[in-house]
Length: 416
Image (cartoon, rainbow, N blue to C red):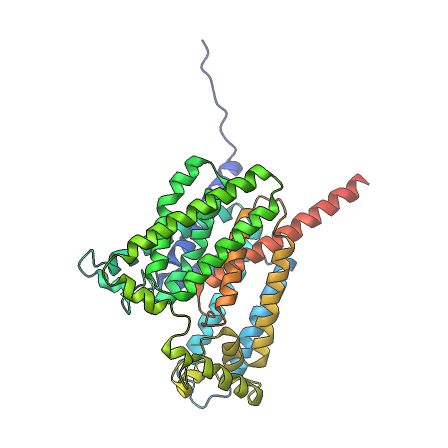
């Protein structure tokens, strides 16, 4: 009997597979590191700076569809550089603007790599889930003091995980939470069981962050997700399933929160944080009053007053991304940022319900990004790493749709 001989794979195919694995691992590691920012510069900054540099040397391609993102982010940062000229003492401003530009490059990078390799969306989402579960678990351990030294994972008696601020930690958990909720609502019963445990960990982390913004963000993104799934499907059976599973998820989360409220100290902090207006919001020079003063100053200083100067005048930062754009990046930065946000919302919505392989990731990222845009009205988000990751993912899908449409038009012409 002759032995079966399997022909060797071509070297080109082996090399292509190896490059694909390295690419997936490299990008996924970057996403994973975004969940650990205890000190700055964080490993994320160092790693991503090297990764973007290497990628730029070996073929980082910026397509025409991504150019609006590139141009508007650059003009936004140019506004910050112009605003810096209004300062008598630069202090840490050059470093601050360098971080702003770096984060802009990360958004461009994520948009570019996902356009060229849409299969990266899945590995990026899973890496984000892993990072979120780990950092959420650290926050839970820290909040309940389950291990010696675990208090380092809390700030102001609130869970912060491997972040410096609970108000960033909580929102970071939302996209992976929405992604898992999507898997539960659209997958099999087995999937629902598998994803329920990590989702519960994330919801607990969001709750224990005691971030009103994170609570509202997760709730709003979940509503957008469910509404989009309803609109996308014409199947009555699927809609009934989504409705039933959504109701079950609400009951499940509500029971978990009720149990948590029975724990010592949780109920008191929850009742304090659940108030819509805190003392530092409505005071004479509180957050809302500073908004009025700031917007009035913007009329007198069209070039801005310089990054971070607002906080030295009023004792607190702007806590409003629109006001921050005016103060720190001038009118040029404000118009650039506003245009970018409106363009992203419109272009993303236009393709939101199209049946594409990357549509689930677009839906989850778009719903979460919408919440972050709304959240920017009460907090500064210009240096949130995961905000630029979301921005890059949405623009990657916008670019993919443009390429898909271009290829479809070419095929029609060839057939004609």
